[in-house]
Image (cartoon, rainbow, N blue to C red; front, side, top):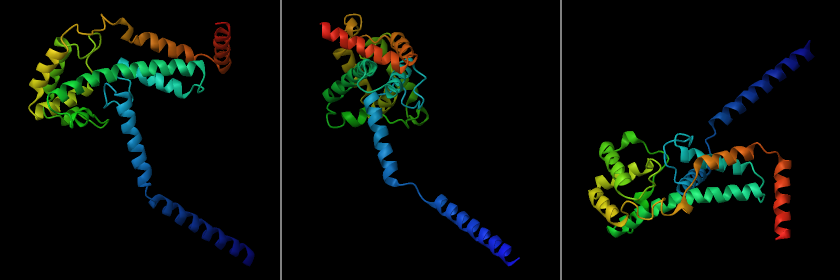
Length: 237
Protein backbone atom coordinates (compact mmCIF):
# COMPACT_ATOMS: atom_id res chain seq x y z
CA UNK A 1 0.00 0.00 0.00
CA UNK A 2 2.72 2.39 1.02
CA UNK A 3 4.74 1.51 -2.01
CA UNK A 4 1.84 2.16 -4.36
CA UNK A 5 1.14 5.51 -2.72
CA UNK A 6 4.77 6.54 -3.08
CA UNK A 7 4.70 5.70 -6.78
CA UNK A 8 1.49 7.75 -7.21
CA UNK A 9 3.02 10.75 -5.48
CA UNK A 10 6.19 10.40 -7.53
CA UNK A 11 4.22 10.37 -10.78
CA UNK A 12 2.25 13.42 -9.75
CA UNK A 13 5.41 15.30 -8.86
CA UNK A 14 7.07 14.36 -12.13
CA UNK A 15 4.01 15.41 -14.10
CA UNK A 16 3.95 18.72 -12.30
CA UNK A 17 7.61 19.33 -13.02
CA UNK A 18 7.05 18.56 -16.71
CA UNK A 19 4.10 20.98 -16.84
CA UNK A 20 6.19 23.69 -15.18
CA UNK A 21 9.01 23.07 -17.67
CA UNK A 22 6.61 23.28 -20.62
CA UNK A 23 5.18 26.52 -19.26
CA UNK A 24 8.67 27.97 -18.87
CA UNK A 25 9.50 26.99 -22.45
CA UNK A 26 6.36 28.70 -23.74
CA UNK A 27 7.42 31.90 -22.00
CA UNK A 28 10.87 31.94 -23.59
CA UNK A 29 11.08 34.81 -26.04
CA UNK A 30 12.61 34.29 -29.51
CA UNK A 31 16.22 35.34 -29.87
CA UNK A 32 16.29 38.94 -31.19
CA UNK A 33 19.55 38.18 -32.97
CA UNK A 34 17.90 35.37 -34.96
CA UNK A 35 15.06 37.68 -35.92
CA UNK A 36 17.51 40.40 -36.98
CA UNK A 37 19.52 37.89 -39.03
CA UNK A 38 16.39 36.67 -40.82
CA UNK A 39 15.31 40.23 -41.59
CA UNK A 40 18.73 41.11 -42.97
CA UNK A 41 18.69 38.01 -45.16
CA UNK A 42 15.16 38.82 -46.35
CA UNK A 43 16.20 42.33 -47.38
CA UNK A 44 19.33 41.01 -49.07
CA UNK A 45 17.26 38.50 -51.05
CA UNK A 46 14.80 41.23 -51.99
CA UNK A 47 17.54 43.47 -53.34
CA UNK A 48 19.13 40.55 -55.16
CA UNK A 49 15.97 39.30 -56.87
CA UNK A 50 14.10 42.63 -57.20
CA UNK A 51 10.70 40.93 -57.22
CA UNK A 52 8.29 42.57 -59.65
CA UNK A 53 5.53 42.25 -57.05
CA UNK A 54 7.33 42.64 -53.71
CA UNK A 55 4.10 42.26 -51.74
CA UNK A 56 3.51 38.74 -53.06
CA UNK A 57 5.28 36.34 -50.65
CA UNK A 58 4.47 33.34 -52.84
CA UNK A 59 6.19 34.93 -55.88
CA UNK A 60 3.57 33.30 -58.08
CA UNK A 61 1.24 36.09 -59.21
CA UNK A 62 3.42 37.34 -62.08
CA UNK A 63 4.94 35.09 -64.73
CA UNK A 64 8.45 36.52 -64.34
CA UNK A 65 8.41 36.28 -60.53
CA UNK A 66 7.09 32.73 -60.71
CA UNK A 67 9.79 31.75 -63.21
CA UNK A 68 12.62 33.21 -61.11
CA UNK A 69 11.26 31.65 -57.91
CA UNK A 70 10.91 28.25 -59.61
CA UNK A 71 14.49 28.47 -60.88
CA UNK A 72 15.76 29.31 -57.38
CA UNK A 73 13.81 26.44 -55.81
CA UNK A 74 15.05 24.02 -58.46
CA UNK A 75 18.66 25.07 -57.90
CA UNK A 76 18.29 24.53 -54.15
CA UNK A 77 17.38 20.91 -54.89
CA UNK A 78 20.18 20.38 -57.39
CA UNK A 79 23.65 19.15 -56.52
CA UNK A 80 26.06 22.07 -56.38
CA UNK A 81 28.64 21.97 -59.13
CA UNK A 82 26.58 19.73 -61.39
CA UNK A 83 25.69 20.64 -64.96
CA UNK A 84 22.09 21.28 -63.96
CA UNK A 85 23.18 23.59 -61.15
CA UNK A 86 25.38 25.61 -63.50
CA UNK A 87 22.63 25.91 -66.10
CA UNK A 88 20.14 27.08 -63.50
CA UNK A 89 22.64 29.62 -62.18
CA UNK A 90 23.09 31.07 -65.65
CA UNK A 91 19.32 31.44 -66.10
CA UNK A 92 18.89 32.97 -62.63
CA UNK A 93 21.63 35.52 -63.20
CA UNK A 94 20.20 36.40 -66.62
CA UNK A 95 16.84 37.26 -65.02
CA UNK A 96 18.50 39.17 -62.19
CA UNK A 97 20.65 41.11 -64.68
CA UNK A 98 17.55 42.11 -66.65
CA UNK A 99 15.94 43.46 -63.48
CA UNK A 100 19.11 45.24 -62.40
CA UNK A 101 19.31 46.95 -65.80
CA UNK A 102 15.85 48.45 -65.26
CA UNK A 103 16.79 49.56 -61.75
CA UNK A 104 20.02 51.12 -63.07
CA UNK A 105 18.02 53.18 -65.57
CA UNK A 106 15.93 54.57 -62.72
CA UNK A 107 19.05 55.28 -60.69
CA UNK A 108 20.67 57.12 -63.60
CA UNK A 109 17.67 59.43 -63.93
CA UNK A 110 17.43 60.08 -60.19
CA UNK A 111 21.12 60.92 -60.00
CA UNK A 112 20.74 63.26 -62.96
CA UNK A 113 17.95 65.01 -61.06
CA UNK A 114 20.37 65.62 -58.20
CA UNK A 115 19.39 62.72 -55.94
CA UNK A 116 22.77 60.98 -55.98
CA UNK A 117 22.89 60.26 -52.26
CA UNK A 118 19.20 59.38 -52.01
CA UNK A 119 18.83 57.22 -55.15
CA UNK A 120 19.41 53.85 -53.50
CA UNK A 121 17.00 54.51 -50.63
CA UNK A 122 14.35 55.83 -53.02
CA UNK A 123 14.64 52.66 -55.10
CA UNK A 124 14.48 50.27 -52.15
CA UNK A 125 11.11 48.52 -51.82
CA UNK A 126 10.48 46.14 -48.93
CA UNK A 127 8.37 43.01 -49.11
CA UNK A 128 6.00 44.60 -46.59
CA UNK A 129 4.97 47.35 -48.98
CA UNK A 130 1.22 47.69 -49.38
CA UNK A 131 -0.72 49.46 -52.11
CA UNK A 132 -3.28 50.45 -49.48
CA UNK A 133 -0.71 52.67 -47.76
CA UNK A 134 0.28 54.60 -50.88
CA UNK A 135 -0.47 58.32 -50.87
CA UNK A 136 -1.12 58.66 -54.61
CA UNK A 137 -1.95 55.18 -55.92
CA UNK A 138 -4.02 56.30 -58.92
CA UNK A 139 -1.50 58.92 -60.06
CA UNK A 140 1.36 56.44 -59.59
CA UNK A 141 -0.45 53.88 -61.74
CA UNK A 142 -1.03 56.44 -64.50
CA UNK A 143 2.63 57.47 -64.47
CA UNK A 144 3.77 53.85 -64.57
CA UNK A 145 1.62 53.17 -67.61
CA UNK A 146 3.00 56.29 -69.30
CA UNK A 147 6.59 55.23 -68.62
CA UNK A 148 5.79 51.81 -70.04
CA UNK A 149 4.20 53.11 -73.23
CA UNK A 150 6.24 56.25 -73.93
CA UNK A 151 9.76 55.20 -72.92
CA UNK A 152 12.02 52.15 -73.17
CA UNK A 153 12.71 52.07 -69.44
CA UNK A 154 10.79 48.76 -69.24
CA UNK A 155 10.44 45.79 -71.55
CA UNK A 156 7.58 46.35 -73.98
CA UNK A 157 6.66 42.64 -73.91
CA UNK A 158 5.63 42.51 -70.24
CA UNK A 159 3.51 44.68 -67.95
CA UNK A 160 5.64 47.05 -65.88
CA UNK A 161 6.74 45.73 -62.47
CA UNK A 162 4.47 46.70 -59.59
CA UNK A 163 7.47 47.53 -57.39
CA UNK A 164 7.92 50.81 -59.27
CA UNK A 165 4.48 51.99 -58.17
CA UNK A 166 5.90 52.47 -54.68
CA UNK A 167 8.85 54.42 -56.04
CA UNK A 168 6.62 56.68 -58.14
CA UNK A 169 4.46 57.30 -55.07
CA UNK A 170 7.58 58.61 -53.30
CA UNK A 171 8.51 60.78 -56.28
CA UNK A 172 5.02 62.25 -56.34
CA UNK A 173 5.32 63.04 -52.64
CA UNK A 174 8.65 64.78 -53.34
CA UNK A 175 7.06 66.63 -56.29
CA UNK A 176 9.65 65.34 -58.78
CA UNK A 177 7.58 62.71 -60.61
CA UNK A 178 6.94 64.89 -63.67
CA UNK A 179 10.63 65.83 -63.85
CA UNK A 180 11.48 62.13 -63.70
CA UNK A 181 9.07 61.37 -66.53
CA UNK A 182 10.57 64.14 -68.68
CA UNK A 183 14.09 62.79 -68.12
CA UNK A 184 12.96 59.23 -68.86
CA UNK A 185 11.47 60.35 -72.19
CA UNK A 186 14.73 62.09 -73.03
CA UNK A 187 17.17 59.41 -71.86
CA UNK A 188 15.20 56.33 -72.90
CA UNK A 189 12.88 57.13 -75.81
CA UNK A 190 10.77 54.31 -77.29
CA UNK A 191 12.94 51.86 -79.22
CA UNK A 192 16.18 52.95 -77.55
CA UNK A 193 18.19 49.77 -76.84
CA UNK A 194 14.91 47.89 -77.03
CA UNK A 195 14.48 44.13 -76.92
CA UNK A 196 13.77 44.16 -80.64
CA UNK A 197 17.22 45.64 -81.33
CA UNK A 198 19.03 43.44 -78.80
CA UNK A 199 17.54 39.94 -79.09
CA UNK A 200 20.34 38.43 -77.00
CA UNK A 201 18.92 40.10 -73.88
CA UNK A 202 15.47 38.55 -74.20
CA UNK A 203 14.33 36.20 -71.43
CA UNK A 204 12.12 33.40 -72.74
CA UNK A 205 9.97 32.67 -69.67
CA UNK A 206 8.04 29.68 -71.08
CA UNK A 207 11.30 28.08 -72.22
CA UNK A 208 12.89 28.55 -68.80
CA UNK A 209 9.88 27.02 -67.04
CA UNK A 210 9.86 24.07 -69.43
CA UNK A 211 13.55 23.51 -68.78
CA UNK A 212 13.04 23.53 -65.00
CA UNK A 213 10.14 21.10 -65.25
CA UNK A 214 12.25 18.79 -67.39
CA UNK A 215 15.08 18.92 -64.85
CA UNK A 216 12.69 18.21 -61.98
CA UNK A 217 11.62 15.07 -63.81
CA UNK A 218 15.21 13.78 -63.94
CA UNK A 219 16.67 11.44 -61.39
CA UNK A 220 20.10 11.68 -59.80
CA UNK A 221 21.36 9.11 -62.29
CA UNK A 222 20.19 11.18 -65.22
CA UNK A 223 21.99 14.21 -63.84
CA UNK A 224 25.21 12.28 -63.34
CA UNK A 225 24.92 10.88 -66.87
CA UNK A 226 24.50 14.43 -68.18
CA UNK A 227 27.64 15.47 -66.28
CA UNK A 228 29.59 12.59 -67.80
CA UNK A 229 28.40 13.51 -71.29
CA UNK A 230 29.58 17.10 -70.78
CA UNK A 231 32.94 15.86 -69.48
CA UNK A 232 33.33 13.61 -72.53
CA UNK A 233 32.56 16.51 -74.83
CA UNK A 234 35.15 18.69 -73.12
CA UNK A 235 37.74 15.89 -73.40
CA UNK A 236 37.17 15.56 -77.16
CA UNK A 237 37.23 19.31 -77.76
